[in-house]
Amino acid sequence: MPSVNPGPAPTTTVNTQSPYSTEVTNRPIAVTMTPMSVATITTAEQSFGLNGVTQVTAATGIKAGDVLISVNAPSHVAGVVLANCRVDPAVDDKFYVTFVNPTAAGVVPASGVYLLTVMRFSQSNRTNGTTLATMGLQTTVQ
Image (cartoon, rainbow, N blue to C red; front, side):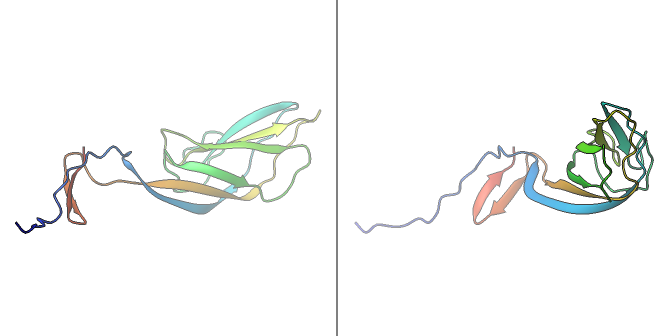
């Protein structure tokens, strides 16, 4: 009896991936910032952006859930260190920068154009329960 090849069998796969795709975009943003003074021997987290509390700046386009990778100051100021940066997890256009002052005197971080590097994940626009045809296979998103 001759062998008959019926072709590829359709397969249904449950999607266990995160609703965020693997596509990531990094983008630089230039923001004019005027940080406040940092008291002696302390750290101070200051908020910036259109919805910032400490220092309101122009709209930046940062969205809640973005990741702030780095903040580059416009110049060096002796006695102050830029220690941390983060995006507000619930409010668009609000980010935080933490400055450290290890000296015995109050210090004001540099004012000017700071360069922020923001990472954003591309959110999937597929909804649960939809069926996609990919390379001849049927896939159901769960």
